[in-house]
Image 1 (cartoon, helix red, strand yellow):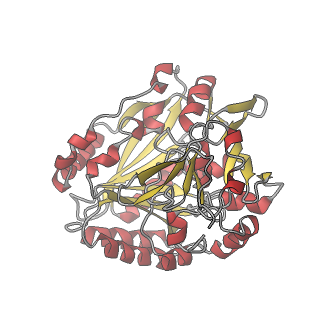
Image 2: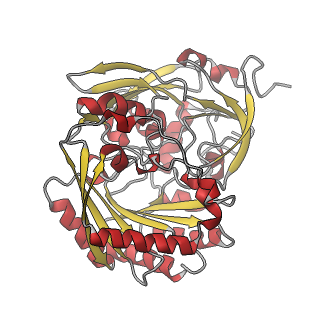
Length: 455
């Protein structure tokens, strides 16, 4: 009988959970020290599924591989070259966003799209085509990726880009690690307009006013980022603030990129509930009402969760779901109103502790999350009946022509997911071409029928 794992690999059996802490899996973990240690993996794996992962910060089960092998790229993290004329960085997949910002922000360059936490690998950013509060202007991470070097299921190394192996390139961006292992990336950096964010808080009440505010902010010269914050705990209708930001040219304090200690948030978890969050929302609203203008250093602005990297612990053992959906621009007022009315109608049983809306445009990959329209995000503590509640929310999103974000999801059904993503059949055909034996898999991929159940 063939052994599922090769004897020569130093594997450690670990139980891991998604960042939302409601999906868990036991798998073998392999932590290669260098790129060469990864290259033989496809031939070494006999019958167990293989999944490359970065730092494991996806919220659901995208970075879990029950009974298989996780190959972590966190130590494969060298910056390989930089072309100053084109501002193009070539780096191994384990290089983090923080690594790039530490090296290039003082030189006036930045990644155009950044996640809310800086300790995310570049490979992970590409695998989920992450987006930011400036997506409507610069697009997602995938638009800055010029090429990727991939390790395929047959053990070959290939380059893919918008000119070569184009199908593999667009299937990998947003492809959640199912097409192969990203070894290296070429990423175009953008000029950094400034080192300080000047923020303006614009109040709104109701969905129509929200969309008017967003359109108003988009039309203003100099605005680089925008996000709408909503209080869905204290109000009877969708109300809050659109926060518009402009990066100002001020001196860079290199100290902001230093290591930060994670506070012991687990100790606060017993006091983190509906009532404490209602109080927080009121305080947050009062702050923006009394101080409609503010300034933030670059790291605190781009990476607010760096100050609370383990904030998921606040939700305790049961965890939380960060439900993020995208809705088309056409008909957005009606579809957003339906979703917000549904959430508000059920807030006594399923309170949304945090809610935000962003303006987005189409993503770069076949399975990229953003579409031209609006992204809406809600944080729900896990409780009895939440899954059925979210299933109904899925139906509202599907009826509007929208979709959910797999970097944040660990519970949408396969049937619902396949209705959300119209290019799924095309993606599966490309994936089968490059991985005919279903080597690369994850708990999420099996849940969503993206790979064969035994693959």
